[in-house]
Image 1 (cartoon, rainbow, N blue to C red):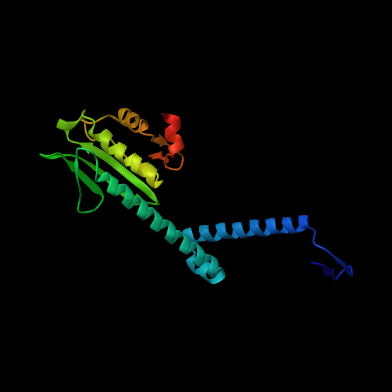
Image 2: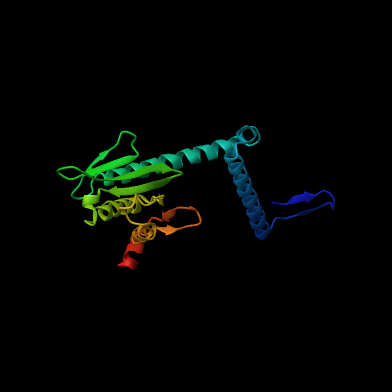
Amino acid sequence: MPYTDIDRGYRTHFTPRRKSAEQAEISRLENELRAFVAIALQHGLRDYCEIRHPELTHELDAGLQRARQQAESKYERVMARLAKVPGLIACVGDTGERTYYRNSHENVAYIEHSLWNKRFILSGIWVAPTYRGQGIAHRILRQLVDAADDAELGIELHHEPFGEEGLDKPALEAFYNRHGFQHHELTPGAMFRIPRTPLDHHDRS
């Protein structure tokens, strides 16, 4: 569309290339503003954001709410699978952050878990001393990682050795390494497992 250059007194036209460049610049500025408002909200500047950028603040809030709901749904799917470890009977504790496993006679293991920052938080797997060495921890963890892969939910691991009878820290890390956990810059002081896709499983086989 032509426009009049008032200073120079003549009409010119936007070329397709110029339109594309301007649209790219507008998109860049909008993304920068979105990032700025998101960071401001994280640092407690909600009043400022709601006054200066109310529509964008509402949009970001709605997006965060959807993301939280999706993460909660994924977590529930993983927990449903954790209740079905082969050969074990599961029972969730009163706080909802510990699942106990028993055989036909007694409790043999438990796993500590929670949901935080849209991640499955694994705080440890404990197996009763008389049942160690029978692959129980492996079965529980295998069920967890398979469920997390299907739900596309990352697992953040915080686990320290349980007393003198359990694995020491190097052996514990090696155990989790075999199930795909690695040290990651996103989780300093912890280990993290990125969800695997069917293609990842194919490449590994």
